[in-house]
Amino acid sequence: MEKYVIKGGHRLVGTVDISGAKNAVVAILPAVVLSDGPCVIENVPNISDVRVCIKILRHLGAKVEKLTKTSYYIDPTTINSYSVPYELAKKMRASYYFLGALLGKYGSARVSMPGGCSLGDRPIDQHIMAFVALGARNTLSQGMIDLVAPENDGKPELRGGKIFFNVITVGATMNAILAAVRAKGTTIIESAAKEPHIVDLANFLNSMGADIMGAGTDTIKIKGVSELHGTTYAVIPDQIEAGTFMVAAAITRGDVTVNNIIPKHLESITNELVKIGVNVETFDTSVRITADKPFRRTTIVTAPHPGFPTDMQPQISTLLTLAEGTSRITEAIWDNRFEYVKELRRMGAAITVDGKVALIEGKGRLTGAQVDACDLRAGAALIIAGLAASGITEIGTISHIERGYDGMERKLCALGADIMKVGTPEEDDDDDCGDDNGNNNGGNGIA
Ligand code: EPU
Image (cartoon, rainbow, N blue to C red; front, side, top):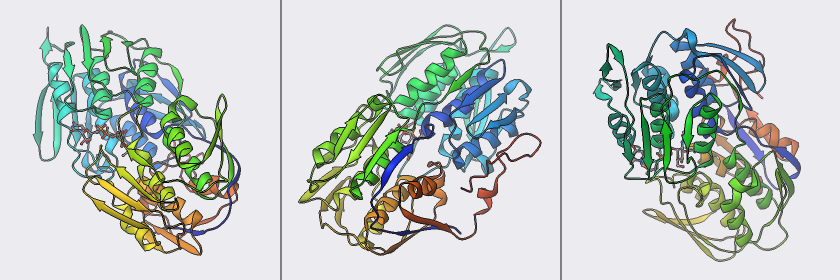
């Protein structure tokens, strides 16, 4: 098992380039299934969730080649299976995007119930409701979700429909788009999620000839098309990776330019950091973070975009352990996203949790300890804590972190952090992510 060993107390200084967005690419790679021709996807991060997506595409019969460190050629025209087995689906929450993509293209999808970080109950009722609104029949047996489109003249055909979500949901909004894009007629999605990755998915599909309007607003209108052509498309930068480095820079009182970003996507994070007393200078495609004042307490409630992202909650809470006064954090999206708190307590943090609310009493000091990355963003928070702590922090179960951060320790080392990966990779970390001939081309995730 690998772990990160961090010697805290080093200021981060320099420039870091942000990779492509995890939560966009894990929808865009499945969306390639919908194309009638080969696609090239650029700015793909080297993370294990991408490696799982590639494995699933190959399992379905698609031809996948790694062109460069960050780009893939994917030919979906050789797909000959509509089924994603448990062994693959359990590794990644976003495996549910193959439901919408396979149903939308072939009128048939069989995907095992998805895995992913444990953040409390993660139902997929809204996804199923959207598929059913487009005419699909749904059955669940032995943990497999089966979707079948009705037949018209002997051919499977979804029909456009009206979809109104009861909760704001990123995944179900994306899945509804994937299923509707080739359906007959027009689909209207009301109460849609507005995250940047939803706009990115719509832009990708539109670049293949889809007709999607309104992505990034509450109402998305999709006119079904009968063909989608191949395209070349670059994934947007990762908003949460950028935010994570912004907090890491602040907590070490460093001077870091976070580069290759879209500042608009970071507004809610920037606003909170400024309230806490961090200096954020915004440029066209970068932000510069410095911190020379005491950190101030604050109150944050996580919310769907454009609110403060739940995926930044553990990281900013870690910064607040060093602030003056008591901060109040409400986690409004997930039932169970304070698991990292017990690990931070081992490092000297004073945090109490009551249901969805955490009270963080700023202590001004963290000390190194052995801790466990219980999920992806918890892992990021513990890295941030380790960078600021006195002494040595050892973080276990780093496979969670590598699901979503591309070269985390390499990027931190380049900024002056003392962080090392030690131990033997887990079996999955050796996964070949290279071309169809088994050539790796540097894609094994070992930085
Ligand atoms: N929900 C339902 N029914 C559904 C779907 C969702 O009740 O059918 C509820 C959820 O239980 C939750 C809320 O709606 O309370 C929002 O869930 P959403 O569907 O938006 O989450 P998701 O699509 O499963 C994605 C990201 C998460 C991120 C959330 C919220 C991916 C692969 N995952 O999850 O990312 O926290 O949106 O922004 O895109 C992460 O990157 O660390 C991560 C967990």
